[in-house]
Length: 134
Image (tube, rainbow, N blue to C red; front, side, top):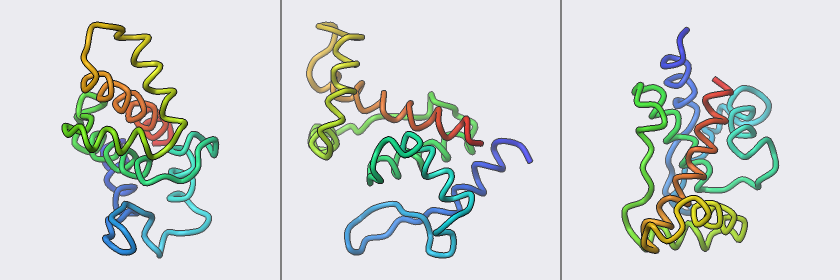
């Protein structure tokens, strides 16, 4: 089984639900110990970060990018300022990604681009963990 097929299989372990809120999660039949748990654990920085809706979204995005053979180039940050600020506000730990983007890009970008680059850094972090897991 190649990486594309593995990513497609792993993608089938997750579902998008609208109750109690809109989010991605592991399907009930794949909860508990097993490969879905292991992948989720890897995407959450091997247990260093708490389960998080954005991390699950980025995990699914990474699986889609791998299965579509787009690689990391297929990842794109949110295009709406409100989405980027919600992402940043969802965890104080995300200030780290903003600081990293600021160090990398400095004054070369505006605030919107800086937030996008910060979000993309987290997406890439999750992508690399998913790619390593596959």
